[in-house]
Image (cartoon, rainbow, N blue to C red; front, side, top):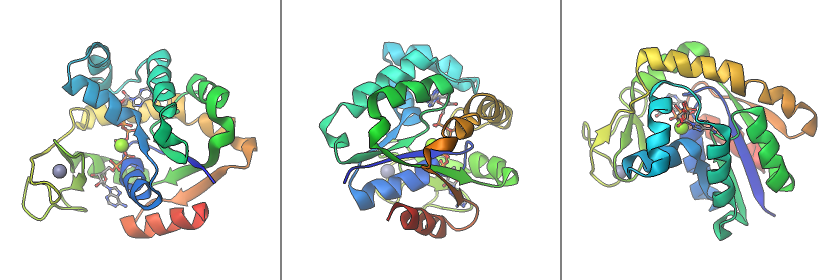
Length: 212
Ligand code: AP5
Ligand code: MG
Ligand code: ZN
């Protein structure tokens, strides 16, 4: 059976952290629009040039751009067995566009519910590996050697939008554009709330229980 999962939740709720674990265990791809956009920026593509200033401001990239990249990605053969959407959809028009191509494949919409008070500390302390994308946190998920990735030894960097003033903007974008998705999906019977404060592995256990 194919497993299509959408992860919803505030910036810093742990979508990326949990998506990476699910992708390994279930051998299905993590589709993170944030990661795809950051890689476009890194590679200096036309898409990257368009997205950079918007992302640095903590605002949302236009729907037609993200819908385009997700549709293309979902059409790839590795998505046939399932996929984990991390950070998409984020607006009602994006959800409508997704429904048009993959409504049947979506089995669960997981709402990662985290205490707002934890968000700033989680995001300010986040570090990401420049080459393999592994994620760390200075306090909660420290790497063994400071500033170096446990998996590949490359440097860990801080995301450009993880500054306190940008974090606030991202939270505002969430409230305004993304929170309404809960109502949009309300009558599908697919939405599950997951308590997403506390230990990473415990949260993961709750998610796996739902998917099984
Ligand atoms: P995106 O990259 O999706 O960022 P986000 O939604 O703000 O979410 P984050 O990646 O910050 O948080 P997360 O939930 O993945 O948490 P994580 O696991 O890293 O988007 C960035 C930008 O791209 C947007 O602002 C927008 O401009 C653009 N964009 C992307 N998608 C778009 C779309 N669909 N439409 C339009 N624009 C789009 O965890 C955070 C930290 O906490 C880490 O350090 C982690 O180690 C730590 N942590 C995780 N879990 C725990 C735990 N249980 N306890 C303690 N620490 C924890
Ligand atoms: Mg993320
Ligand atoms: Zn690495």
